[in-house]
Length: 92
Image (cartoon, rainbow, N blue to C red; front, side, top):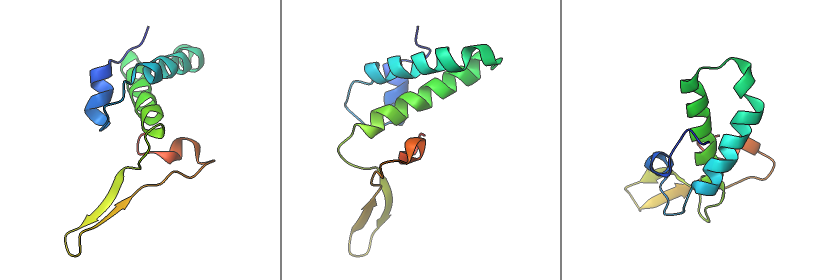
């Protein structure tokens, strides 16, 4: 059973996408790989939350804003680099 809710993921990820499938995957990963490692419930919840946020973000078409300049209105967005694993998003 997931430790986090859709609202908790959406509170940290700017998305209108339903994070439920990503929460389910994050919960499965935490349960199968970390549950028996002696981590606190609070730590497992945080790991699940940020994994779900990572998976949600990876599916977005656009990258997240990394910098913004007022002069000449320049915005820079993070772009995904395949093979970076968890380093592909702010949440990984």
